[in-house]
Length: 129
Length: 176
Image (tube, rainbow over all chains, first blue to last red; front, side):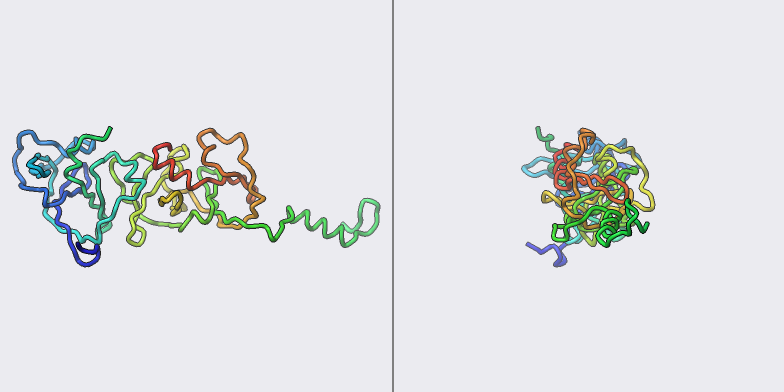
């Protein structure tokens, strides 16, 4: 286990959705496809955001226990690292009121932009209740 | 004025009584003082207890978050800590307005929660005797009633003292 500020880094796959930059843990991403995949799920539909635009990519996510799903996202899609010390828990009022149940944390990057970290498993879990 | 009603010269006691009257109510200096942060929303004056306002922030860029209610403007970076920012206008059901140059973000804390609260302007941070805080009047709108601790007169305005703990807890619970 690393302390958040000891130089540890988190591998993520970044992508866009509705004009925002999101990411999932890279360990969940098994493959990226350049063409539509059967039974894929659009990220905008899962997050209930506005309609997709621009070039698309398809990520195969490994949710564990042998379950894989395909997630359609918008370009640019990049493999990246973020410093573990830059990952921030959601403020409690955001965590309580957000309609994005898979939103797990965020990173405020050096340029002031935000990177929204999604929990890949929760993205495909049925909403509570 | 140098004479009283009977045409006599004023006594020192009379002069002092007049001076005290001009200075407003007599304050017991031993009475506990309460620090208030006074701010304005849509022309109405409000306050929070000073111990519930950690900081007053100006000119802090807000990062918009998708999937949040309109009353939650987004988040700000306060020296590396990410804090939510609520539009107090929206929470208290005032009409929306673009943040003006004088708007400030109060970094509030209460009920084990912390959040920024955008207000139109901050007018004063002051100490008032506890006894000057009066019970809330019956004319307070129903939606504000649970949040109001009392009222206090300040510079010719009636200042509504809000309960930070209740506000943050109710917001988290979705009641606001």
